[in-house]
Length: 199
Image (cartoon, rainbow, N blue to C red; front, side):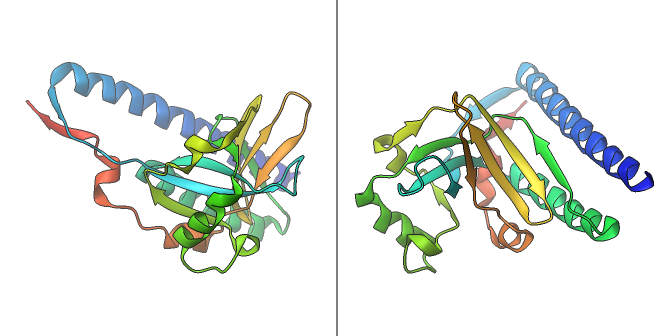
């Protein structure tokens, strides 16, 4: 019972923390916008491409694309680390699901696979592919989008992964990014800066 209450407290606390963080961020952004003049500069968006490993058409290469920002990366690292610690303390698996509609899912054109694999840089073929972070990816403009009714982020002791469900109840689940994967991701400094603000 004690372990169950500890886990419930963790899940409730993390969920509330994420909600408060987003609420404060939104309101601070609005406040800064109303008080300052913003000089916008061109910012390139980083994308996280993660392999879908569970889907209805498993013989077709599929991928989930998630916006990669400093906030996302920092939060993911903290949550995965906490899940690992909690799992060790409780001596049982733990899992936290966040219904945030994160990511878009696509079927990859076969002719684009070599370029995608080359972007990862350390593997030989699609079977070894897990994820890659790229700048301004353009492949998905030619890919068939998979329409999903709900999407969520899941964190457990294995890492962080993404899951979507279509209208028929079929799940699309990505490979997990472990703590080591998240630690190895390096983002340019400009990713979190959308412009230069001046009074």
